[in-house]
Length: 169
Image (tube, rainbow, N blue to C red; front, side, top):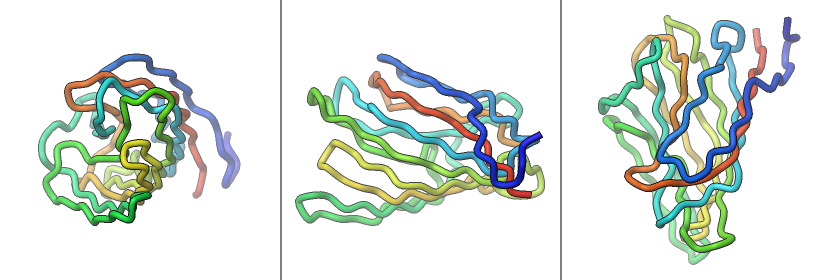
């Protein structure tokens, strides 16, 4: 039984030249907070990493996600991107240039609580345009989320990621 505040490794994955991968071992009935780290994100073209949730094993592919991101770039560029009907919230840009890798971390909240929305927050550092991004969003419907899917639209990518459970109550 995990102790209050304890960080427990649930799963580590290394994906190589894939168009998507999933975390399926969430133990969402035990942990009400999840923490994910990723690094080594690179792809075959300049693209972005996106995310979707699954409810009862079915990926929510429709335009139901809400997100709000703020990013800043090394060249001084910055922007606020947001949507209330996204079909895969953008998390991090990546670059096809060799040795340019992106990384970040995300917190997920209440994935296993069927009475509340599931939401996330985090920070990423993208190699494309050398940007850092603060990300947040939600699946604004009550459900139990039992999987997390990461994908890039139409291109392959590689990365390593670890998912942890955090006991908070």
